[in-house]
Amino acid sequence: MVENAQLAKVLKEAMKGGKSAVGAKESIAAVKGSKAVLCTRSIPAALGARLREEAKKHGVPVVELTQSSVELARLIGRPYKVSAIAVRNVSDSDVKLLAR
Image (cartoon, rainbow, N blue to C red; front, side, top):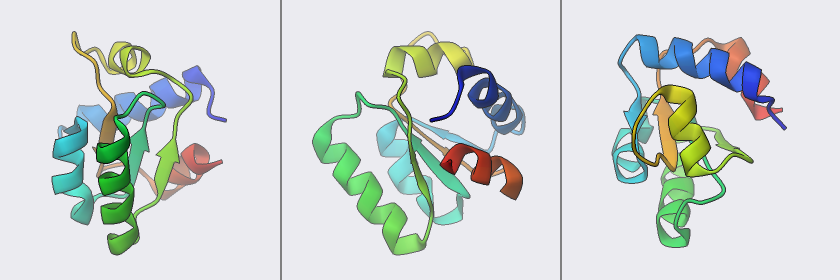
């Protein structure tokens, strides 16, 4: 399980570069060049399945978060619900930290 403080730190770095896809549909499209995909527990089942399948096809790790889409949106400073994020510009150590 990833703690909120660790997740917030990693997400802050990921969002700083502007190379992250926010939202389930956008994440599906951006999986190919991503280092990791973060999914909340409130992602719709059909979109979650498509996202996991696409990530598996491209060898991108999927991190299942315990936070809801509202909590994830709050962490990245968005005023709307965010059920998935595909991150590109994070370090390998941060990816390993999230995957624990």
